[in-house]
Image 1 (spheres, rainbow, N blue to C red):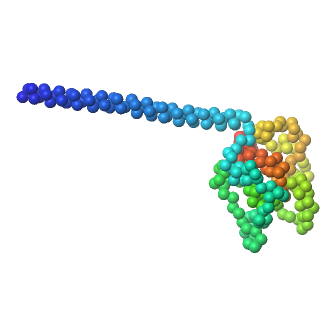
Image 2: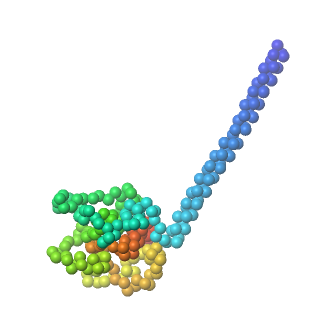
Image 3: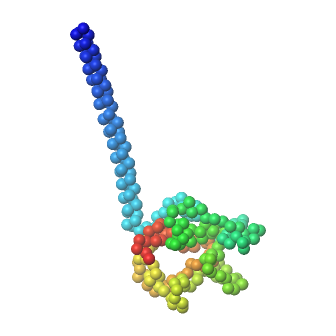
Length: 245
């Protein structure tokens, strides 16, 4: 009887020992693997944070290529007058004045772009919409909802725009009539850093209005005006710097 009890005790001890050895062997491996995985994730997050911080400190117009491709900034863009657009109707937003035989309404899908573009208060949508229309139609007569055309013959305006690529209003409406404001007086200093220039270069440059414009998608406009404008609009810290009123 005693021998049988001792035998059972020995078997239990052996089983318990094997059980402990098995789990002790397995647990460190799993723990080490989890530790390595989590460490790699943290290093990846730190690297991304460092890269974003460096880009922010460098103040460069660097944006994701997927956004630029959507707007027509590709290796072989559609440029005026070399490209041919089958439909030259300009998209408009006023449905009740839109004749379906001549024009149609196009809604911009804000989900395709950074979330701040949809905020109407910072006007980041403006260059995105204009560039999207340029890529679609080749030429755009852009007007804000509070702008009206006061004359019927725009041939002179069109001819001037064909030569220069773009025609804009002279002065941004800042609530003071007949008074020109310098770019530096109404532009946040941090914005100049993104364009790799200094504030002093714009002390005597008057503000212009982008509430209305006639623009053609020429090569010069595409590369020198629309590209940096769109890039700035896609970077929230550029189009709406911290501390901007």
